[in-house]
Amino acid sequence: NLEKVGYLWGLCGAKERLKLVKADLMEEGSFDEAVDGVEGVFHTASPVLVPYDRNIQ
Image (tube, rainbow, N blue to C red):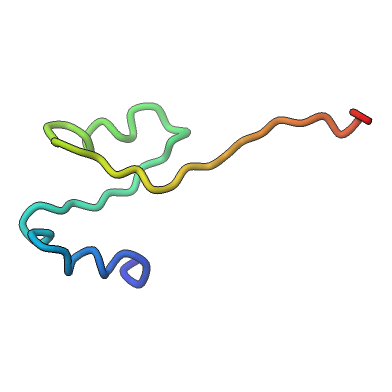
């Protein structure tokens, strides 16, 4: 979504060095290609799955 991340392209050196990818944490291997050969990763979002028991009082 360019509206959410478009400002990143204005960062110094972004046009030459920044690569944005979409991957699914729940799908094994979906990050493999994205992190192959990179020097750093900014992981900015993750689902939080918290199991709970509705019967606990």
